[in-house]
Length: 303
Image 1: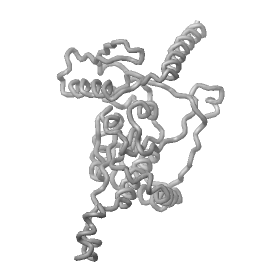
Image 2 (image 1 turned 120 degrees about the horizontal axis):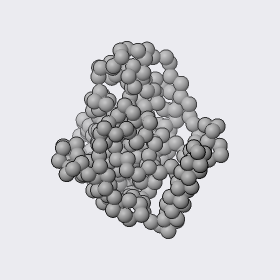
Image 3 (image 1 turned 180 degrees about the vertical axis):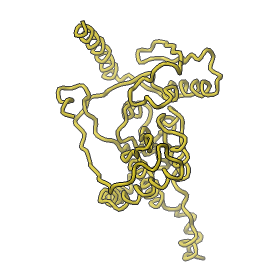
Image 4 (image 1 turned 60 degrees about the vertical axis):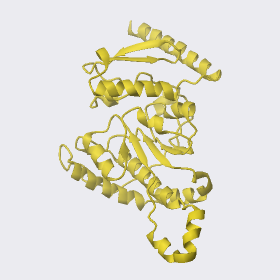
């Protein structure tokens, strides 16, 4: 009986999948900033207890009007969000997009005491973050990143902000999330490196250089490039630590509305179709993300 049900479910998924691929091949944009903004504004009302009857209205991929009742008593949409308020996430649509196997870059860090307490305080988590960040900045990958950015200075000159999506919570209970911390440390490195690469307006600098060139070199303080981060998995302590580091937290899905042709996007291993969404709504300067693989293909079991 279960086998027949699974076959039926697979058939239904295939029909939906084929329909989406057909729309995509016709050039249909599955996501737009207008629809994302419409959902974001409704979610803001929901968080402020002002959304009428807790009903979310949006247009799905097929152009149909859909109504979803936001019920916090229902189980989360995805298993890996079982400790997170599911209503913080805009999960009305989920797409698994097939692609090649990812090229994984393993980065080992020295052992850290992961049991500082059953629940990390903000200060404890900040200390752990600093430790992992120092190890990241001493790594070969960090050096390679620096060289890569320098070699692409001309292409990156237009970057005016960094948008990070789905980098994960910094810790789960008493367990440090190393991949998440390293990804956030990477984001901060990008912010720091790209900010240093920015040169002042030559017309303005030229006026002062003839008078007090040496003073300008020492006195000019370069404002860091704005950095935004979005993940419904963030806990209050995550937000506090990131805020101290200069990363501005945004509720889902507002970060997507920040993405434009002056953005650099960081989304290493998301469980939402970040690349697809961005491909439909903007053309950022660059996206840093793992290569995608087909989650349900013949080789999926090997992963």
